[in-house]
Length: 87
Image 1 (spheres, rainbow, N blue to C red):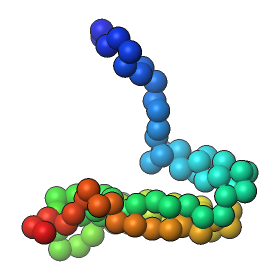
Image 2 (image 1 turned 30 degrees about the vertical axis):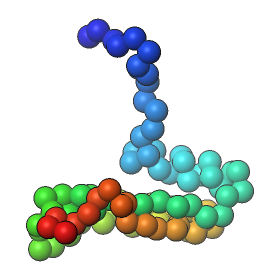
Image 3 (image 1 turned 180 degrees about the vertical axis):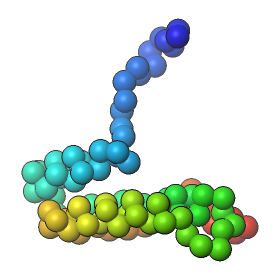
């Protein structure tokens, strides 16, 4: 494995797996609102499903519950780069 010069060789962000730590850190800093976006491909991975991906919905359920646990209000947007299939 050759590393590219000046290219970061560490994990810069892993919110999907570390969201609990991140939300706790926000609470520790006194932050009371958190803007996050909902990734359309996480909910409808192929874009043409008739039913949403339960695993994707579960992630957002857990994320929002963690926010509420710390008294942080989630401010949710649909990521503007993720448009539904066919739109």
